[in-house]
Length: 338
Image 1 (cartoon, rainbow, N blue to C red):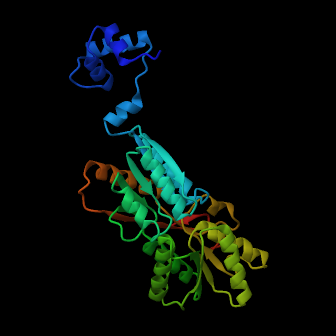
Image 2 (image 1 turned 90 degrees about the horizontal axis):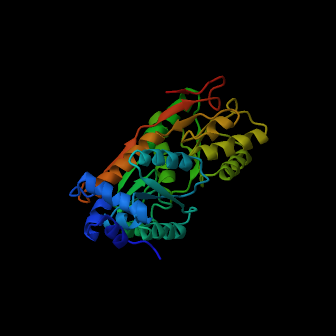
Image 3 (image 1 turned 180 degrees about the horizontal axis):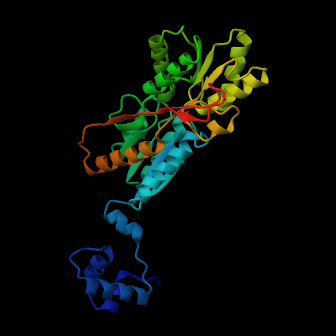
């Protein structure tokens, strides 16, 4: 037979309500009585139900997080940064991968809400298709978007300033002689893909460069390789290939080299994110470094503020990136940031 709180009360010689207050940490119970109740609980073998206590307090100490694809090197780095931030307040992270599918994303969000997470951090799969489920989620808990975002949602967001990042890249390749630029990135259904495309268009115009070639697919190495094959087949290579993330850039570099083209001598190539893969490729990748720790810290701060006050104005924080110059645009570079 399971030991109950009534057994602890009899052993300690106090009321059930006193045991409940002592085990829950209520301030109205003196330290000597708290110790007496805990000692009684140990003697009878009572195990306090932390889940029940959390539900009574309307907090579980768990934050849910949904990312589009954990195989993308950017997201594990963000997840680790969020975990470190949450550990500072003794909270845990429950992670889900939406597999780049709005339907899977919806099921993952519903599952996290069903487990009574205190709040939700999400990088939405689709700027349009993710909107409905986020509207539903925000009726149940605090929600903060990270990196990507869904349109037409009144939700807090924190991510990188894509406009600034693309401006840094375009100015860099222009300074290294590029006059014609190709963008290889993701389709516009991703807010990151759309924003980086729009930012590149504005940056090339500002820099006085020729109209860019645009090849849009997905954030993957395979797509980068396919896009590079397309550029080679046209027989009129651009001076620089600006990629929407590091994975795409790795695919581009590998495929260009397979066709006998040298990076950076024949073509300059840049990435975006500065994930570990950027230094594994040869030549090492010039890229835009996202402030991952700052994004994680700000996301948790925004979530905590929203949990404390649901009426706060919506906040959107675009954090500044930095350009990391390596061999894919500058022979002999050791990875300096600028």
